[in-house]
Image: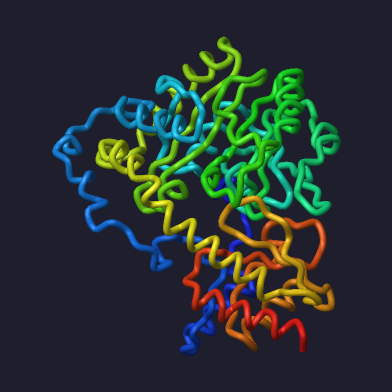
Length: 388
């Protein structure tokens, strides 16, 4: 009766069941899986949502790519990051997940494939399957810093491959694409008729500058490319549901892609008018909104690094940015055993590495968003559990 696209495992996993049982029992769970900035006690200006109440929000203008004023605001935000993007190349969506849906519809037929990074974002399999597309992994390698295994990526391309997905910086690795990698990817995709899809939602959250870094695929290169962003991460406002795609590449391909995307977007018209009207004001306060987020991420990561110290059985993997930290821990227990024991004995909830498709064990993935008191108590619990 139901489509194969929804044939996912529906049972709740052991970790989620255990966490629910802890909370029902009254335990104060120290949750280091929290990725929602609105639940982290971060300050927001009291007048921040006032632009949503503008009278223009009462007028429905069903424009497929979104209101011109909102698209211009996105183009201006790219300029803030040093990238030249014109508003006629911007497509508004309700989220980055919807942006993936649009692009998989645009690029792939049922049974085609897209290449996705491993380790990487756990939702790729679902996002691809819901479009009847296969998500096939290519590896990120770690040798003191993360980099794309370009030879393995090229070997993973088949006649059914339609796109290469990048997360820049990675989730959860926090690794940025480097200029040399970007050049190789552009040449590979241009030569094989593939598109590049670059998820850049965490692009504003770098720990330091790096001249090797290729921070955005929003400007024209040899291959057709799509750069994804949104209010959820850039302004810490996931509840407002506004994302975008910036289209770049050779003129003929770019023009054809935009014409086809217009039909896709016109079929859904999913972005609410009030948030489009408010977009210039919201993006205009981006630096103000990011400041407490940056401070929270920095404070928690520095505390984690200092807490491990020399001789620690856990290693903090190098990262260039993002909202997560990755710990490599002794493989004396399986990851599932480790995280379940942490929850049972220390009330600490973390992600196991296999949630993000790490190819081997043992890793823990920690969100850097929680309140410092929660984060510090959880880190102490993790360290204590490792030395006993």
